[in-house]
Image 1 (cartoon, rainbow, N blue to C red):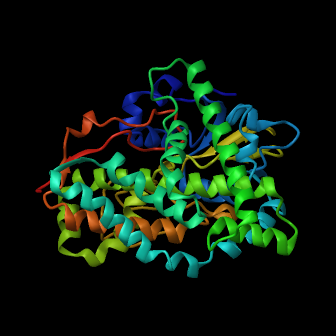
Image 2 (cartoon, rainbow, N blue to C red):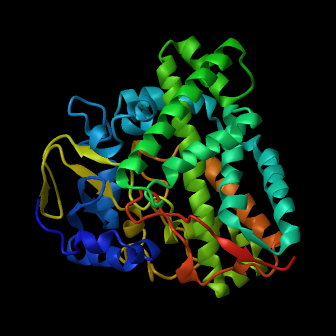
Length: 408
């Protein structure tokens, strides 16, 4: 593997976590297909928009991490198969089969029917925040909002929400504690084991007593079509649970920081709330919660930008670098809520395009709109440089804490 012009010691620092975009610009300019060694695994990073879009739809870049070479061991660890062997980590026709069944239960009508519930959840959370004049917005709003919504959609009992959230947070914040790497791995494996056991028991309970929820709908699809096994219902439930709250929570936090550090754009949105739908797309392009798309495995030798990527290599498509490519976006490092909407890659591309895009957009629009309406004078509670973030090696870009103040 050739050397990357930017050493790993620069790629996985607190400074990179705070602002990775200058580094992404160097990658695009100096080596747009770049081999890197990370704390998780070695891979090739693809950072230009055109290459990224092509790679996301390239069938030679496989998402099947559970083949005979057991790539998942390098990426997720030995305890992951019970939760991660799902449609995210599968290729057609397996991916097509799983996604079609999930899509039948994850209909636009079902999602739109969630709107009153999302609005009520947003207001209930803000009712607890408003009187105090300050909040820790990740803990008090950004994380619980999508967690409550996806739990309600799936049919996770309210009495279990806190426990499920605690275990998913262990996985989300991996690497941010003072524990040793060995202790961190053990904590993640324990969380994975607990979630697998819990979701398995929940699926069995829903099979015995179905209700009007997504897990029951998946079980019904399984029984009617005979093509979705019970372990697949469990892994699909985990995928929807984790993907359904993790990225939305991180996006809300990132979006709030972006607005509060760009007061002209915040003022524009306050004066013109009709801009909110397009603002969500620009905020997602500007600082998305998934900086690098989930890993792909090269099934045969491929070449991008004259760089040969050998069979068996891991490829990371750097979505946040592609979304700042000046070849596609004028002044890409400028937050412009009036930007003419372009084809950003924040929700991916190709057959793995985000299935929950409608729900994510609805939650973000309702949640951020309500925050701006109900928390007047919203501002950061600490200097932006003191915000605590997920570690740079995390697959997610988000905040550990977001202290804010406002007029009570």
